[in-house]
Amino acid sequence: MRLHPLMCVAVVLVLWPAPAHPQPRACLDFPNDPNGPLPRQDIDKNVYRKVPFKRAGRSYYVETFSDLANPSGPSEHCFRWEAVNASGSDLPISTFAWPRADIKVDPLRPGEEYREKNNRREHVRAQRTDNDVYAFENERQRTQSWILAGAPDPAGSDTSAIYRATRTRLVLPGLSQLGAPILEGQIVEITFGGNRAPPPEISQIVGFGRFAVRVVSQLVSRDGVLTVTTQASVNNPERLEARLAFPSLRALEQIRPQQIAAPQEAIRFMGLYQDLRNQFESNRGEWSFSSPIPGNLQEPARVFRVKQPVIVAADGVRHCYLVATYSLVPITLTLDHCW
Image (cartoon, rainbow, N blue to C red; front, side, top):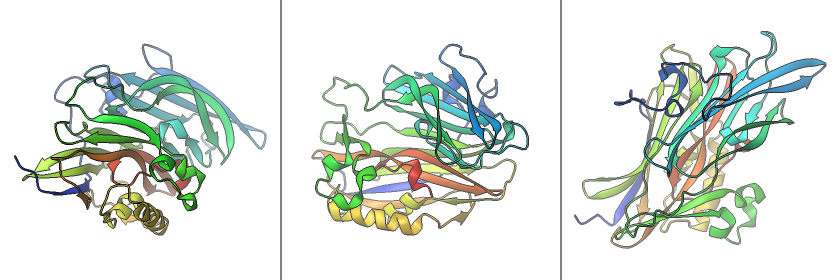
């Protein structure tokens, strides 16, 4: 089939369907797990830690949970992270952040009904290691969990996409105005096209309690046109009044590069992001974002695997999650960009 020379990136938000076959626990968020939340013990690949914090003479505790599975082979991983404020009922924790789990919340209220979650399924390396958690803005403690550890191992096939772990400054040299946090951001450059297949989808579900946003990013062919499609939607069975912001996805919608990784578009992207960061929308369940990708799959093409914030405001609490997507712009954002 001859592909149209104009390709598109689209972002859509949709519900997480029930799995057709039994899935490992790490591939399920806890409302869809028959066994519920992750256990308070190290068992199999589940990692549990109770992390203490002190504030104004009072003791606070955050429980962190992490699980890992290989659902379809050694190169694909399901990561499951959860965090609970296990302090007293009158001890909310302001600005809790767990960078390696891509979770930030202000405040983190005590109790299971406020359990934070992030589940991601993608082809990346995994590693179990100590890492930082923060409370009350910048008070740091250590936990242990599974983390993403870079691009997947080479597939060893002439028909597989090529992954290269890199940093923004190496793809966009000379753009010092973006600042060190952006320039040092870790991204994955993915080359495909010609005889090389597009990369597989990235699936993720984030949220708190029974509230969830599912995000799926993939490359698909529709009517001869290849699109990068990121799909996501809200599952809100308790009908919480929530507003959502997708600043980077909204910014990408306005980017029209003539070439991938165009420096001027990277600068414009960050300016748009700052303008859109506080623009919340009512929860209408689904969203769709799109932007054209230049190129022709008869020749090698590339995209970038990056992280982008999804921000939820509900009941006086702000939640921020970094979701992994494919993008034309080689910029990955951090929890510091949430607000």
